[in-house]
Length: 137
Image 1: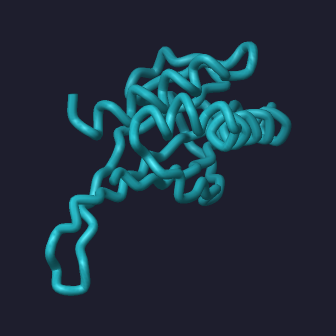
Image 2 (image 1 turned 45 degrees about the vertical axis):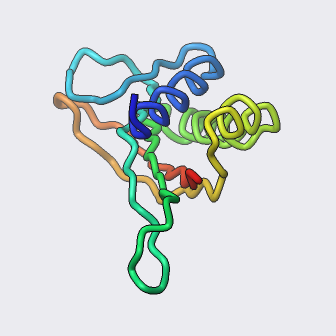
């Protein structure tokens, strides 16, 4: 498996194991039979790191977007519950061993990039995105 698949699988499995009770986890929201609240782990994006001369260093910047999606009626409480869970799971000491160290990854940051309303099959949902940034040596 390549770096994209390895990082996606590792993050997905870690969040799935630690998700709050009653939550679902998906790789996409393309199907309309999803139940909510849901964590969506998107594909990992990989970018080669370059030195000042444009030469590849061998290191790779990896980012993965995690979406927290809740029904609008339960949005504030459930949104905070989901975002707190993602943050606590991905920054816990145990994650540094199981996710980062074992996959030769360095944690760079976990950033909350905002919330928006989404229409999914005629229903209004609240969606928030968080970006996990890693470095693969």
